[in-house]
Image (cartoon, rainbow, N blue to C red; front, side):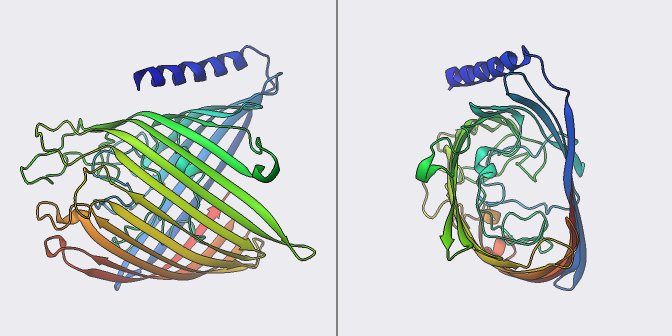
Length: 408
């Protein structure tokens, strides 16, 4: 893959260099972000969480019509559970993509830093950013910012392992290309495609995104080291949206997303009986929207980077429905959601019982719009995790939360 890596990096550099040779309009700077604060009770224990993200974008349009820009995104993640996942939220047992740049123990860090070029050729992104599989992902609808059945930022129970977003590459340095929107025209006019390439996924030094000292998971006691990593992560994704006219004025909107990802394994084990293999994952999602109602769900399956073993891998799905009266002051929204996952990574291997977990999560909630972009809501969530006795045995939690959020 070295030749591909050199070619892609050289091609992206040529695009940016060619664009910079032309005079440009003044640089425009935009600031956007979102934040949420959560307080609640998880099995009677008071808990809370704060999440925030702010992005700074500078862009200019060249004489040839090409837009050049750069984006920096800072993130605050106050209380994400320190738990190990068997293919769920961070989708693997080896080292996945980093969360960003910052001190290992800090709640605040630089999540994204990338440059982009956009024009008739499509869009090219170079730097630390989410991969195309996350950018074009589709999952069950939600009305909350951080408290969700799937793709959550806040899990007060500490048990939820439902995650169908194909985001194994994290915010590693990567190259992403998307052809122009509607470039196919006709029936396929609403199709968006994209590919991303990450040369290396390194350890970020925090168990939130990867093991620092590794796991002992094989019978012969082979242990991962902090130098274990993934190389040449490639992901491809598509998103298709179509409006179907119903009656004189109403439309049914259909949105479909699908993605595939693979990465080369470099476990750096001294044992000839490695349990690891190249990582593979597939994800697909569907949403149907009619007036204020949205119905949808998604599913993801991955081998979690493991060699072929009985009952290995990870499988998760979610489904839900939301209803919104609008997004202006005084509008309300309600939701129902359900998710389930199976992380039978190594069966009942006593060396690593934490890697086996079945999860079920159900949630109901309501939100109220206080003003444009400002909401407050309440949700009730029930989570059940089935684990081996060595990992704590079956656990369940009933959680009631209040979330306030703002987007700007």
